Length: 343
Image (cartoon, rainbow, N blue to C red; front, side, top):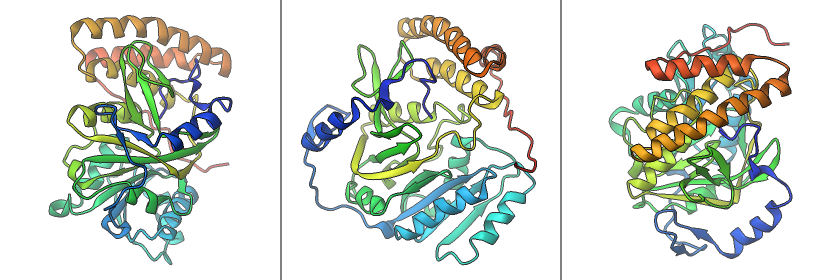
């Protein structure tokens, strides 16, 4: 869920990553709360059996199946699957058939429509009822799988009494990148080095282990539909005294945009809308808010131009106009593409 789009996010460059990875391992980790060091080798991590998985399913049953089977191989016993497919239950029926031999205890939530990421996660947590908070929650994208040993390393990084969000390295379409990046508020860029003059850290939302101490409803801000929720979440966790912890010993393999359709009206609209919503949701005061809006006034038309040339389509411009009007009026459109036979 990278809001930098195609206009200069350096986080995926192969040139800097080997050196940064060595630095991460040598210097251990940094607490975002106050930049204090904490030891790489810790004691008192939680058990994998104290965790429950949450997966949002969107039509590609073979991808969701691979995701869930990777969780089973990691020793996870329970998972909640939310059907965001908005296809009349067709792909979920296929998924159920594929997983009939799964050793995991699976709970299926069927809202009948695409709730989006934030509301989908909240619906999964709400289904736990009174047991919410009895287990740590592993959020993982349906187009992602865990490398062997990753869940154990994530669990080892979280003490039972800590308010922590932990994330592994992300092996995506552009290579291996760290989970921790920084959102720069004025330029709306994602940067791997630091927050710059004004910004904050976030953990990539492909895979997050969230401590039970942080679990309360709503966990994610449902103002966002698919993008921007991880940025707002990271900002809010740290402001409330929590810790964002990257775990470079673990790896999540993430296809990226597999379900969302990079370049589609759905993708462009929700990406642009999230850029604008973040100005309102990061709560930086009036002066900063107007400075952020000024940055978006330059960034978003520039982004639309780049996307227009890349895809040879006016979809990005249409999405910009729609998103601007909808944020101003407090409206949101799902724009979930109609389901149909896949090629």
